[in-house]
Length: 185
Image 1 (tube, rainbow, N blue to C red):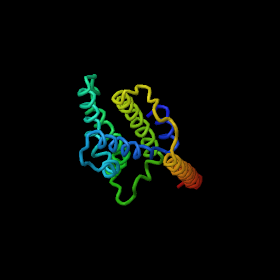
Image 2: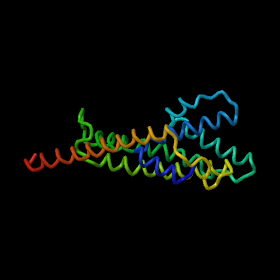
Image 3: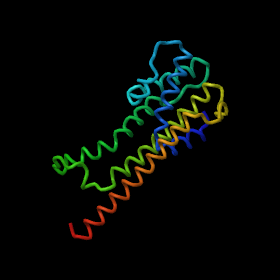
Image 4: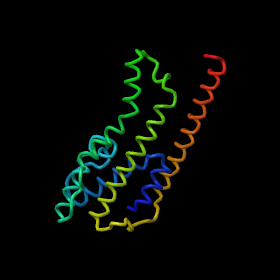
């Protein structure tokens, strides 16, 4: 897959394309290895299976006599920690302030900002891994099958709807914050 296509699809789909990315990579591995794995659960539980995928890419590169994927374990651990970061911030905040039942009201848009930053960092790791997958497929530039499919169009529509929801939520949060701050609350 082209790194440009991955970038565009990840942006347009608000990151949802990552689920499809996991599925396609596991289904390709299943076809290559003829092992009885289930790509759908591995995509759904991508956070759990990610280290295994990264390890498989590394092993297959080495098997083909190429330099493996350096620090694949660190990349996988980074993806897991980045995925958990927004929840951890809210959790630590609630422990520190003794909040009970009030999620992250005192943090404002900080969890959203951390989510955006961690998602972007995860995306950069995905790009790095995709470049090794392209190398494994002897397509370093990711030039094969650059066209779009109907399924990718569906992903794009779902992603655009997510973008609309995110923008509405951010605007509403800011409007509520401004309302209460103007009232001195």
